[in-house]
Image 1 (cartoon, rainbow, N blue to C red):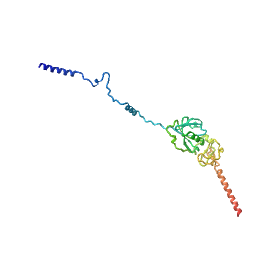
Image 2: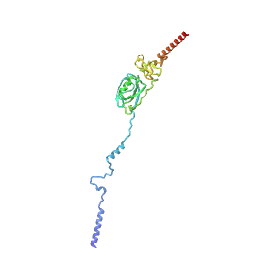
Image 3: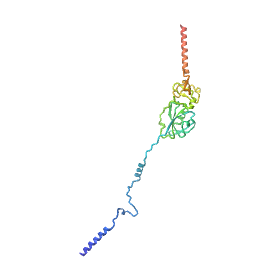
Image 4: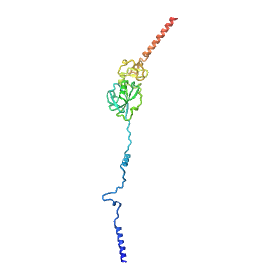
Length: 252
């Protein structure tokens, strides 16, 4: 009995000893000096994709400002070939007065006869058109670099109507003749009387004889009656009638 009692006491002592020992926390299984990181670990690719989604901002570039101006000759304009239009190398004189500046981009200019506006995608062709076009020459200009208009895809379009437009002081001083067919006012530097006989109206293609003298101060024409060709036809008709009458009297 004594031995059995001793064993029971010893077992009780061991059990109580175990209950008194401190319990280990889950983090105690890690080495000293380290901490448990409970955040979710993501791969670099997933993290990069998440970052892109977070900072993605849709930005649209505003279209560059366009201006349409009429420039009297001499223009005072130097152009160079650009990727999308003709770049303005320098602008002085009449071009500068019209608001064109170095660094601008020309996308339209007057055609050979001034009746249309043509896309300015080729320097050589545009220069030829500008030289042949009557004054003033119309330009459509993008302020600064052209990043919004594809010049090669632009269509031709009608030039702004010149009839009824207010003349500038320089144009008014040179205005001497008016086309009676369409109202185009001739105000180039070359005197009208010195133009070749095959000159035609740049707006309606009427021959030179369809122009009459024009007073820019009063806005009235002078001698807007029969032109030379019509007058000659009338005189010829009258002469023919007189000859037929004379022959009729002689035969009677």
